[in-house]
Image 1 (cartoon, rainbow, N blue to C red):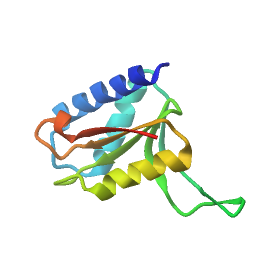
Image 2: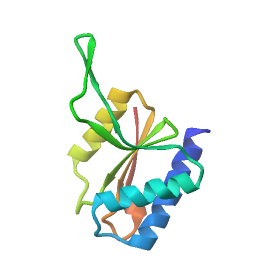
Image 3: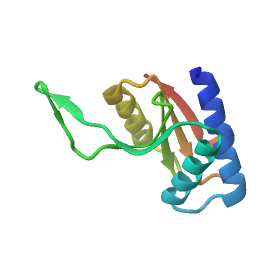
Length: 123
């Protein structure tokens, strides 16, 4: 499946979840509902996928976890915050680099309109 099709499906699913739940809930609620919605669309979704760090020829698990990995290609990092900070963007960029995935979506559900809370980033 093409990456743009996958990201389009993710965004449509996120908009549906946001329209039903609205802003103000915990990130974990959005994660559970979005992963369910994506699976209903026949997309493969991994939740809390670990990302090890390669250092000195070995892989070290230091506790980094991707919120959602869709079709083994797109990283989805979810937030429910007042304002997305540069730190959140840096986190997604680091996940893209560490995992070698091409595209990531940073989605902040704590906004009046979801389109205001979406950022697409590439590796």
